[in-house]
Length: 297
Image: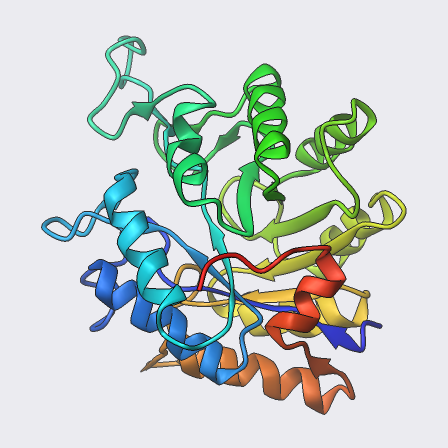
């Protein structure tokens, strides 16, 4: 059981959720406002993607990231900022017998290009997606090779940013521990167990426990499930000794038929935490647990 819980809110993501919810944050202003809303509701950390304001699609535009970060840092509300560094790993294999005819969803760049916004903005945390994955049905693959991961981890370490190691399946955890053995991760390593994304690891107790049982000594970890498994995995992660993540990136509903906001999902997670006899950590307490130094205004 973890009695001192870091609460992360992933406020928008890059998935095809615009139009499936009446208020998905899209513009930098909306994303920053969602982050501040989550922080006021009890989030220790906000996990941020950006989207093209005109199309709502996920983006790697450094200028959009800068506006989001500047707005959060100038809001007067303290919160740890995590920026995704997963954009740029998208590969849509060509259909049928033409696999090399890559589809329109392909956005495949090198490890250092994926970190362009991290280089410029120096968030406290950025993500590192620790392996390749069949992502959903169809022909879409998220690509993150061992050598790309080594390159990315080394540069993140040089920048003094904490990598959040995104673990979508057991092999990803195995390789993240290899990065630690190679000296590419500073202590304490930070893991995020990502459950329920087809076709990675399923969102159930046995899977989460198997991953937790294979964590390296001294690791800080969090876990989440997508969709209807978001809140059950909040409780499960706490009981297994971990931290939690919620937010509109992973789940659109507070309950059946009721659209959520980032604030309401964060409040619900904090209620679960307190009812289990634990407490959500403040951002400053979270920095202490993770060995971070506050950045920006």
